[in-house]
Length: 507
Picture 1 (cartoon, rainbow, N blue to C red):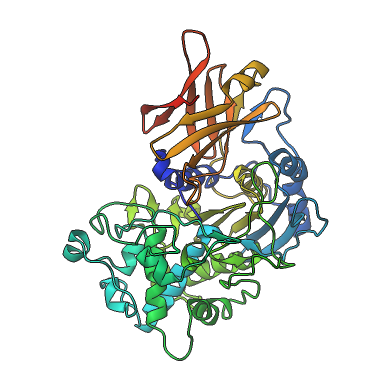
Picture 2: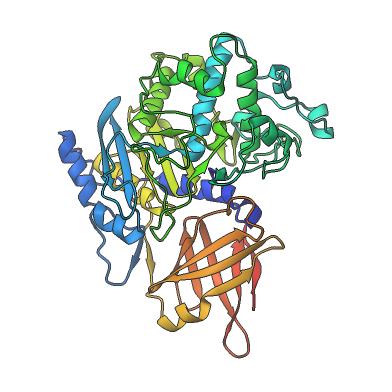
């Protein structure tokens, strides 16, 4: 799956909350003293040696090396690419493809891009809009041939458009997708859209009035994927080949593909995903290509950023200035979102970004509209907090025109607290929360009880404000430990949009 989140912490919509937490947190890399070292290798070395933790616990150094932070977060491998003055300044891989093996990550290592698949799909769509094969503002159903939207009171009165899909205002359900692992039957796109076996997600349909509210939806992008297939001619016969011909080849993205690799035959250049503890995750395949199926490199995603930046000033290879401006124009302010990208900042700080999470992978891309600056960070780990810290370091070294991230101070967690809080809690009728200990650290994991679809988010590390008050930064939330008359942990109280929600401890 892939997710982009925006300050809503209900467990059913936790993926939306997470994307927004990422946008708010890592859209503000630190920028200090405006010093920009000039050869790229010096800049790279400064980034590698000056990672500032987002949370400082007593005794922790406030500047650490990238390798130290990778070890802290149990991140086996990472790929970084940086844009400076309108070109890729440097790109490098760090760590290994898989825990327990020695194959190194390089700048050409493929990672799962997760929800960053969506802006690449949006870019592909805008090229078709320029050709006149898709109308940005017409009902998307007009572009569909082999499948059509189920009729509903919402879709009939106000049919969703491609524009609304790309800014998550089309009213579709299916917030996220989870892919399929070894041994599971893999559905076709039509089966996913219909919600028929072997699809594990419900039928894609409009469940809210299109154009009314932001509601993050992978389902809408699956409809867009089918439309892109249906408007094709003999020049291509699949979504994969369409994107390759219209985006990958023109932009020299030679290490990008929507083709799904074999789950049983590891691909040498593809990183293996890992969970928060650094253990290899189950490989997954994604028929939901447009929402989560892209495999690519940090450098190739930088080429997407460069195309948006260049096109915004009339110099795009595949995108017109008008199309770029459409993508970079806010369709809503809560959150600020364009077509395929989330937006932030004004003047020199105006920027576009997207984040992604699939099982075992996290990534982020950010580009400044008018400054020719940006970066992409990709990891083969569920633990996405590190990419925030890396982007902070890049922003400091390259003097990005944004405010620095705040650094939170945490207390050491008492051993007795670690022992007492570990266990399961009833989060909702369909989901549970589990507190997991890893040494002296604790993690909160919310998961679906039936396990048919992806867990809403990977385990979030909890940091102590006091013996009973905790917070996490990925996603942003606060948690209070409620005790009973025997001073035993009875429930977790977490903050949901200013209201306390109680998750009762299970026996």
